[in-house]
Each structure stands twice: as C-alpha cells, then as structure tokens.
Length: 199
Ligand code: ATP
Image 1 (cartoon, protein in one colour):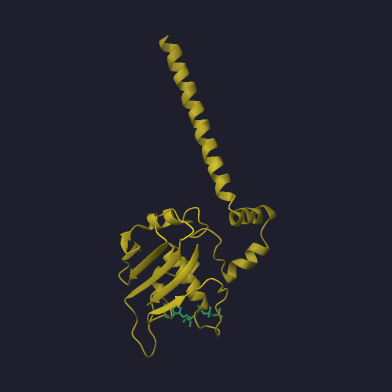
Image 2: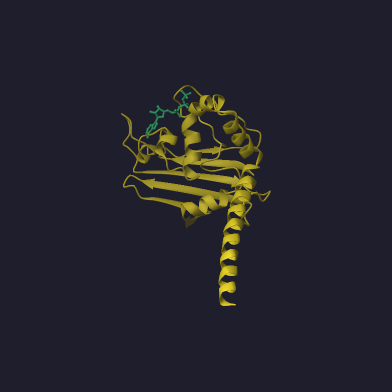
C-alpha cells in the first residue's frame, strides 16, 4: 500500500485546488519556510479522521479552512482527497484504489466519502484499522513530538517500536481475548452455581 495522491482545496494555505501525485520512491517534500509543507501532512492526518485541532496545529477545527489573504476571500469549505494504492490488498476492501475524502464547511458541517460514497468517520477508521495508518498511530510524527519521543521512558519507546513493527495490535487483541476469557469463566462459575442449586 502506498499513498498515491493527495488533492487539497481550501485547506489551510492551499486556497486553490492543488494536486500532488506521489509516485513510489518520493521520500521528501521540500520548500521554503512557511510554504505549506507541514500543511500537507496536516491534510493527510485530517482526511484520515483527526478530530483534535491541536494535532493539526490549530485552535479550532475551523482553522483548517483557508482563512483568506489580502488578495483573496476566505474559503467556505475545506476539502482533501487522498488516494491509497491498495493493489497489495493491505486494506480489507475489494478495491485496488481507495479514495478517502473529507469536507468541512465553515458552518461546522462535515462529511467523509469512501470511493465517492458518503461514509462515517467510523467507516474510515475501520478500513484503516490494522494498516498502521490513521489517527493515534505514529505514521505521521510532527516536529514537536520528536523531542518527546527522544525523551520518553524506555517502555513508552518500546510501545512505539511495537506499533511500528505491527506487534502492538496483536498484544492488544491478546489482552482483549484474555479479558473475555476471564468474563466467560465468571459466567461459567455462575451457571455451575445455578445448576447446583436446581439439582
Ligand atoms: P516550515 O519549513 O517553517 O516548517 P512549512 O513549509 O511547513 O514551514 P506550514 O507550517 O505548512 O509551512 O505553513 C504555514 C503557512 O500556512 C503560514 O503562512 C500560515 O499562515 C498558513 N496557514 C495556516 N493555516 C491557514 C489557513 N487556515 N488559511 C490560510 N493560511 C493558513
């Protein structure tokens, strides 16, 4: 799976429709200070379901909408389309390409689309689950969080490495299964008690 393209419209400093085609092998985006490099990674986070404006370097979610300039009116809508190449089947859907769109109006209304069909945020998160992409993962590390990672406790750093290696999700599933088993044991004990009482 790889990020194939990203289209921004009215998102932060990208007032006009801007399309980025990301062929395999592209490893960096370069540009002068303030030219919008970090806004591109903010757009990726946002379209994948980020809900915390601070993680997008803003105060309120509305800050993602182009705020206007001396030459141009503010936009009423921010839209980001992201296309993932899924020809290796990483994502659990029968499509070789998965296009995720997020729109937000200044009124606060917002919507997601998956391959052009209106979807819920939960559907986007479900598709990305297990892929290592999405909110709460470390597929995008902001400039600010680098320091905290370097200064983090060894066990926190280990969790990060486990997430990157893909073992964290198995650990979480194991813990969930163990909790369920413990719950089942309790139910079973209760059933035995009731059976004993009846007999
Ligand atoms: P650096 O190399 O310094 O980290 P950068 O290339 O990563 O810079 P960004 O932080 O992505 O730059 O972009 C910052 C620019 O985006 C600023 O000029 C800021 O005014 C502009 N910007 C951010 N949000 C909005 C918005 N909602 N509307 C218009 N412009 C915005």
